[in-house]
Image (cartoon, rainbow, N blue to C red; front, side, top):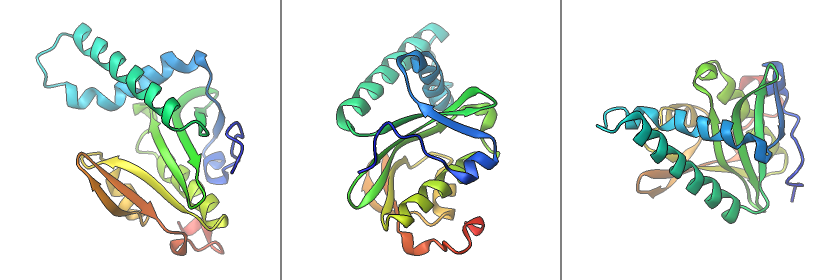
Length: 180
């Protein structure tokens, strides 16, 4: 198993100017804002005040964060930086048969620029080199579902609101990683 404190050297991500560092408690404010940015569209139609929405989102972030830390004790908790500023998170755990993406999220200002695809391709290549699959739970309504499907992830289990997706390394052409 890979050291959970190791910071990856992903070449596609690096080509886009991304750097990674281990998460610290000082990142909790950023991570809470990042979480809120992923949920704002679904809360927009609710008749709650901004304060009520912020309170709800903070409570949900704390619950998710605690759940992740408790259930994935050996994970790599990475902050994605762009131009020296936090731009997202990548949480990974390395299992005997797969690299599990616990969570991947980007701030709104950096979405839609190919960063997510580059990150996923780097994780896929790393897993393929280890002869492992890549797994992730994705909400059915998540706009990124199209990206996962385009990259060859397949639904292996319906979990209600989420689908468990898996990518198998036989789909990766290591001789031509730029084509992923």
